[in-house]
Length: 173
Image 1 (cartoon, rainbow, N blue to C red):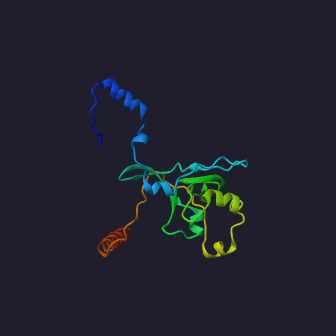
Image 2 (cartoon, rainbow, N blue to C red; image 1 turned 60 degrees about the vertical axis):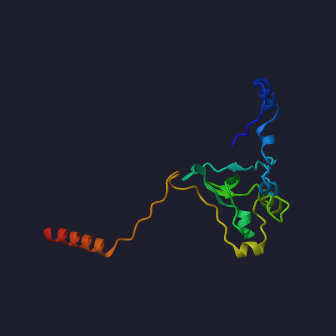
Image 3 (tube, helix red, strand yellow; image 1 turned 90 degrees about the vertical axis):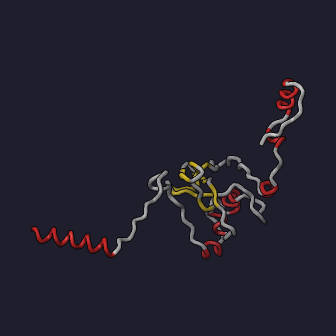
């Protein structure tokens, strides 16, 4: 909604509009202040976060597919945390390692930093965390952009019709 101002000339309006940007005119969201997304700097060993190229068609339009963060899953964060970022260097083939780039509640580092700094790119994960949770790297969908179709279980009437058609075909031979 646009606010109407009592300004006497178009020049004054243009000056005011030029002096302020949209961010200054918008109030800060209190929810977003606590968990600010940080873009991790590219590491010396080539590790970086990339956005998931897979998309899903939803009611709101085309969106990036989100997967469960490996670090959040191992720590069993509630509610579950999902992310659209993965580390291509830690991924094997097309199986991606998804990691958050947000500092969560009670944590000092992002999941990306925990995975690479504390866990040596996932090689030194604490044993008790691994025993409680099985992690696996997910491949991208086999048909990107398409919803999976479920096959409906055939009803008794459909089975009877197909059996009758099948037996009729055998009698003709």
